[in-house]
Length: 432
Image (tube, rainbow, N blue to C red):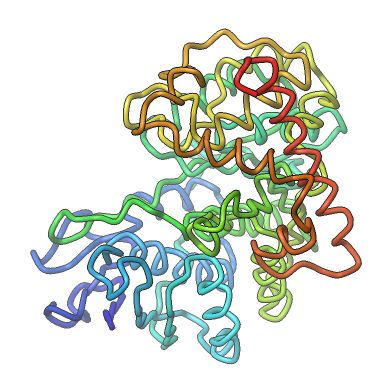
């Protein structure tokens, strides 16, 4: 088991050893104060202060938990675990109000296990970082007046359609972005095309390990995204006297389910970042702690193609589609690969929705099929399409995780419709 001990004051951190990693939360001093500690969250405090209002203790505590989880997920390599994947992780995290959270220890651990596939032990203590004092008007502050909801904004096609939908319906969202290097430029390109009343809250956790080694699987990334959204929602509540804030997570139902395309992708080998069971688990934690946010995926039962087809401003979507990024590998070559599952679903959705894009992918599907290094996802999708008529769809979608029985029929429908969109796209490309 790897133990990770967190604190915002580096003087309170133990010395590192082979099984213990000390991590400074929020990196208040702005640098590594000791060569043996990791740091996460250094840029975040200034970003929170620029909201111009003091966020709640519950919001900062959830952020501390999320940052600790992200640090553990990043700093502990899966390749060094017994089976090359499942890690044993023990986290000691200081909170400013631990009494709100201690009774939810097992709920947190179960949610994290479902999300990442690791075995988690979460120990919550006192003495945590408290909400920072907001900046005054002499700083450039995020405009919050009149805003009524929060939406995740990644720079992807789904999040762009989600924002278009909210603005078309008259909502005034705070768009929350996890501004990774590269993602930020795409988010800004889309922002330049959007019109309406909204503001943006851009944050980067910026984890830095002591030895420079990081794990890249990032199965827990969505909990950080949700934590940033909770911070934004807390600021809206303070600024606009809101009781409850809707927190939108725009993701098509097919990718949200992410049912394993082949048997070797069962479990957390397929990501679960917005799986309905995970979202339900986090909502339950919010409700028990008293974080007054309602997580909503308005496209839970829509395919990506249906999202494109039913977008409330298709002219605007056509103008910004080239600015969006769906690829899971694009950062490696600063180009969308064209052959990963998200790229395939993207291209199938635009084919279904009748929206043309003008971008160059790294590989065509035909080229990928003859390249052993790039054909895995294409082959997996071809196998899934071929098996659609033979397999038990209920069993198939439940392989991704538990689902409410009264909604199972809807999940089956969105999954089969998603495969149908891919089938039609493959046929149009001449590979099926």
